[in-house]
Image (cartoon, rainbow, N blue to C red):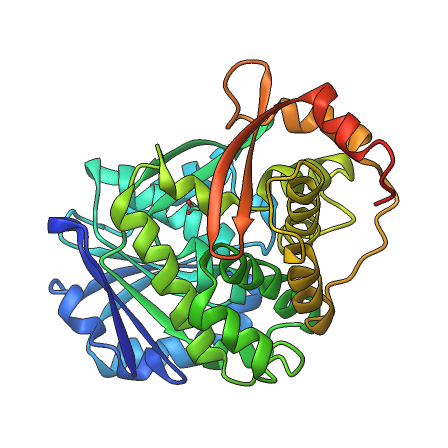
Length: 355
Ligand code: GLY
């Protein structure tokens, strides 16, 4: 098992990464009261309920089960309200622990409940999708959606431990695995180095499950580095949003139906690299490197909309301040930078360019 420390003074924690981490990680050390609330979704519970049940039983940990429908609709104030009531009815107290067992939706919902129930109780992330293994389970962003926007109500609240067990990936649908690779390739673009080499030289991208533990380790190491320098997302942590301003707008343009988050981020990384090259900021050839990795991962899309279609949505992104669009561009692979551009100027950049 590989252990990676996220160093945040008294909020520091370890990410335990291995095939079988659920059985190996010292879960009991973080649940001293031996009482937990297990928050999950119906799919994860059906597939992996027996594994977590036997692990908790073997450690003598009592738990209540809080199972939500799978999907984004569970990341709502309604679900949160239900969860608070159930936690109270189960007698959860401040010394007890919430286990977030699922993908990003469950991690965000359970994490925000943990941040706020009785003014904050410990929680452990046990991610089950590639996207949540490499991104949302690490760094302490927790939130629910409002009808008028995603992640509008939330907090920064770090988990007490992350258990990154790659065994769960074996039941992940191929489309979801590939979408997670979109986020992995984003890390390779902003980080370069060993992760880029790994994705370019090994069969890891083409043969999805090869070397995935090392890939998850390198993504989490990159993310931990940004989070340690900027826990509350006011400076360098924003570089993790490479491809996301385009990506969020693409998701929204298609009413969250055509592309999943990871797929939209994959397109967004390509558009951000193209924007950078068109603006003369990004080293020529960078787009080709990113496109090459995306193609190997099966993430090439013919995208029918244009930047002019999505630019108004990019301007409305809640991360913007003022009348300009905030982008993360690359000077080259491994060197992200913040860049502001007006909507018209962005449209003009792409005017002659067919997506
Ligand atoms: N997903 C980006 C971040 O955690 O900052």
